[in-house]
Image: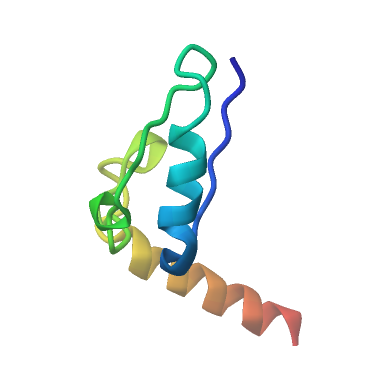
Length: 73
């Protein structure tokens, strides 16, 4: 099977789901995910090679971007 991920405007959601649910069950597997389940803000914990070296990754990125902006001028 192939996999697609689509973001659907709430105004047409019911129409799309109606269409998908009327396709043969052996040809399609419908899995829905509510947008509210996704994390709403970026993680403030470092991981991977940065773990233990950077206290606040978001602040670190801001500092790095600020330094590169100064270097460009």
